[in-house]
Structures are given as C-alpha cells and as structure tokens.
Amino acid sequence: QVQLVESGGGLVQAGGSLRLSCAAAGRTFSNYAMGWFRQAPGKEREFVAAISWSGSSTYYADSVKGRFTVSRDNAKNTVYLQMNSLKPEDTAVYYCAAKWGVLGYVYSAYDYWGQGTQVTVSS
Image 1 (cartoon, rainbow, N blue to C red):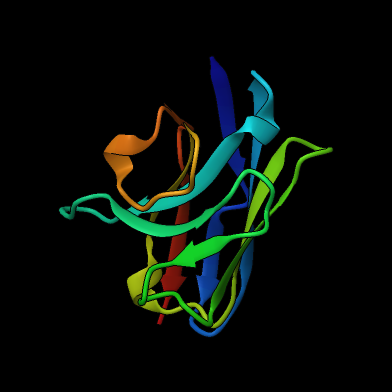
Image 2 (cartoon, rainbow, N blue to C red; image 1 turned 90 degrees about the vertical axis):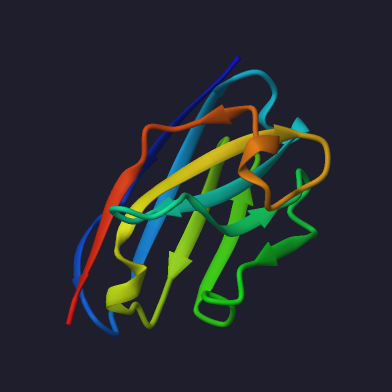
C-alpha cells in the first residue's frame, strides 16, 4: 500500500502560481512513477503530468505544457506540481497518483490515489 496526501491547493487569481505537494508513505516511494490528474465539476478526470521513478523523465498534457512543472524528491517521499500562469480553466480538484513501473497518462493504470486538493483560479 501507498498512502498519498496532497496539499497546497487554494484560490488564486488568473496569472498567478501555486505549488502542489504530494507526500507518500508506505512502500518504497522511489519504485513508483507518479502522476497528477485533475477533475473539474461535470467533467472526466484528466491527465496533467507524470514523472518517472528517478525523475529523469516527465510528460505533460498539452494544455499545461510550458506552464506546469512536475518534480520529485525521493529523499522526502514527495512529488510536486509547480503551476504558473494559471488560467480559470485550470480550476479543478487535483489528485496525485502512484503506479508501479514506467510513467503513464492513463488514470486506470495508476494503483494508488490521494484524496485531492482544490485549485480555484479566478478571472
């Protein structure tokens, strides 16, 4: 089992920044690729970003490429999502997730999920 707890969400104006954190506990964190997903009201959960177990590979959704940066600190069992130039359409509940093996963008491939943190971007 891997327990994931997100933090760092909140209310921010358009153009602002937020940094989300996801702290992991349980099995060896460095064995897992990590992903960030989001879900807005009335919409399906969508992929945002992913990072390999070592941090050497990352992958982003086109909608956030160039604005968001995913990183991890395996010594702290934590993955981060730095979000810059936020837009109202980024408003959603953001979830971190862990999967064994290579990084991916399909949410059904992820084994463990956090409870989510709300991000609201006002115009």
